[in-house]
Structure formats: structure tokens, C-alpha cells
Image 1 (cartoon, rainbow, N blue to C red):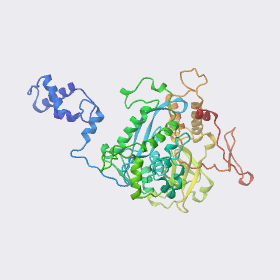
Image 2: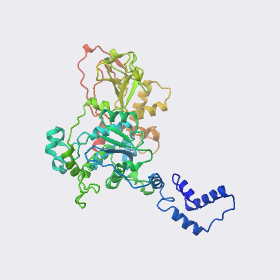
Image 3: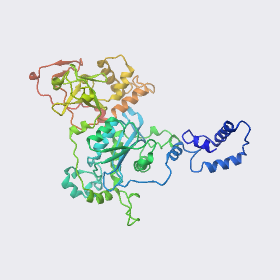
Image 4: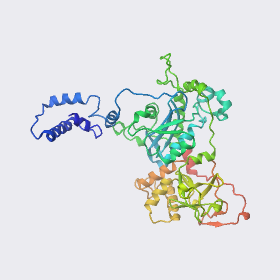
Length: 516
């Protein structure tokens, strides 16, 4: 029976009856059929209760695996004496349904980072699907002050908090209108073995910011227990108070949750940012004074105490720094430009580099290119000779009215495997347009504008994922003027046209959604 219990540690949960049957099978394999007589059912139950005590053999499979993987002996803990000395990052599905574009309800992923020394939740982002670039954006938000938002109470401002606002303001002017969330520069980040965190892009982002990257062992959640507990606190202290709460499993989910008045992704992100500022002023049980165990500090109070000895160095990220945090790929620069996933990018600034070698022998003389998976409208090519970045725009950008990400592009390319680049661009634009407009007859409960359920989900997730680079958009080259009726671009001499001042496209449906 001990062997049967050990086998069940990593398997699916079964009842005691199965364990009794498995015990008999092991006896027959070792000693032969009928050579050992099993005791009564009552005796087997008593024996199983003793052998499986504290192992959750017939209980939760997740708890059982966690207990089985836990090492023997007393727990150890690495202490951190300065903000940013040791930080932990993790991602998990948030137990809240949000309303994506076109009214599609869906769950989103929460990615957060916590400072072990102060228990400060330095940043958290919500995305329909977590990508490696989201972890890099989290690094950028960690070293950037959280601005006060319209409608927030003034009690949430950094000037009203326990943080040393006046002294920090003399060092970092960005904190003047900041919320009461400390800015912490990571030194070491502990992550799990998830593909988002061990990706080449996130490793490169940590290397760019001078951060020590430290992944834990496989199936070793206790090695980053602080962020695991923090994400659990988000569920109990924030998520369950939000409309659309689903519970953390199907057994705890209510009926017709998707019919409740749900928040949009951007609105829920703003609510989460406000809750984080409130969390920073809440006393934490893990921040007790060693000399006075009855006194608990809040994360902001602990940060104010430690920053006196550790100091504070501001890190201001420029537009080029945000580009550095984006995923990278290596491509050749051809006469027609650069091609990524059947999309062609080009610009006049690329002329000196066409069909040239980059000089990076380790990459077979290819050129380093950074891209945003949430915005396919442009890419950035590193000029290895003169330094800096060259912005290239997608040649078919005039065919679409709004930017979109690779999710919609890959979905359409899978649906139309033999289509050309122009046909794919038109198909993506048509998909997003039909998904936004909905069916002609609002009473139709069937297919919405000829879209499948997956089409609607892809379109909703695409429109709910803003670009990852918070920098001012650059205008497409002025020598490519698009005819809105024909969709064709005519080449016009640069000296014969006036300076083009880009203006955002006004979408009344989007504006109506914002007001709602």
C-alpha cells in the first residue's frame, strides 16, 4: 500500500477503492496470485488512513503534487536587506471574467513582481495571453513611477504616504505626481520555468538592465513562495470583490457569471493599479519588527526604513530603451526590405544597408530586428555601424485602419495558407471590421457577421492588447500616399508635397465604448 500511495502522488486523484485494488495487484506481481490474503475492508481503511496522513492521496491533486515535491528537512530562507536585492516574478490566470471587444467574455492572465525585502508589489499587468514581451514591460513599469489617475483619492499620492517623498523628489523629479508605490530597481529576479520567463527575450531584457536572472528548479514553487502567496492575496483581497469573479476552479464557479456587468481589460487594469497602491499601505504579517514582534510594518513603511541605508538611484527609460526590451529576431536586409512572417517592411533610411552584411559573425552577418507582437505596423532595425535604430513600416499598412497584433495575423494566415501578403492584410482588416460591427440583425443569435467563435475570440483579444511600447508613434514615410478608395499607394516626389502631420483616426464606436 505504501507503493500504491507513492504511485498516486503524481497521478490523477482516485478513491480508496482503487488503492485497495492496486495494492492487491502489487502483491500478486511480487508473490503470486492468492499467496497473500488481504485483510478486511475496515482494516484496509485504517491502514490507508495512517499511510496517507498529510499526503492528500484522495484529495486535491495540486496539493498532493506540491507536498510530494517538497524536500525533506527544515525550510531555509534567503534574507534581503535592501529594496531590489531579491525580487520574484510569476504569472497566473486571474479569476475574473472581463469584457473584451465585441462583448466577448474571457479570463486574462496576471503577471506580477514582488520585492522580498519590503513585500512591495512593484508592478502588475493584465493581458489576454501572456507573452515574453509582457514580462519585459513589467520590468519597465517596475523602474517607472506610478502616476496618479483622475478620480483617485489624494490619500493615495506619494506625498501623503509614509515614503520619504521630499528627499526622493530631490533625486527623481518624476515622483512629483506619483502614487504611493515605490520605484525599485531589481538586482536579482527569481522566476519559474515558464516559457515566458526563460525565453531569450526576457533574458536579454534582464541583461540590458543589468539584472541577475535566476530561474528556480523545475516543480519548485516554494523557491519563490513570496510571489505565489502574493498572487493568492490578489485573489482573496481583490479579485473576489470584482464583478465577474469566477472562483479558482470550476467547482467554485457560480451560474451565468458571463452575464454579469463585466469590466473591460483597461478598466480592470486601472482598478488593479489603484488596489496595489492601497496594498502598499496595508500592514503585512511578514514585516514584523524583530525587537517588537507585535508591530507590523506596511510595505511603504519598510521601504522608507530600508532606503535610508540602501539609497535610491533613479533609472529613466528612453524610447530606445523600450525598443531594447522588445523581442528580437535576426533577418537579412534585401533589396525589397525586410520580411517577417510574410510581412514586408521597408523605408528610405534602409538604403545604405540593403544587401549588406551586418558584421555580426555569430549571427551569420544578419541584422538584429526588434518587433512588438501586439503591433505589426512597424519594426526596428539596429544599425550596427552607426548605432541607433531605424524604424521600418509595413508596406501594407495603408490597407488597415487600425494596428493589430500577430495573433490576428497568424490566425488569418492559418485560415488562408496560400494567400498573398496583400490578401492577408485585407482579410485581417475585414475580420476586425466585421467583429466590431457585429451582425446586421441584433436579434440574430446565430453566427455574428459570418464569424466563428474562434474568429470572435481572436478579434477580441487582438483589440484588447495595446502596443507594448509607450512611445510616440512615428508617421509613415511621406512619399507613400494612399488612395482611400482604391487602397493603392502612389509614389509622389517628396519636394512636391507638403509636410504631413499625422492625426489619429477617429472611431465613434471606440469612443462610445470608452464612455460606456
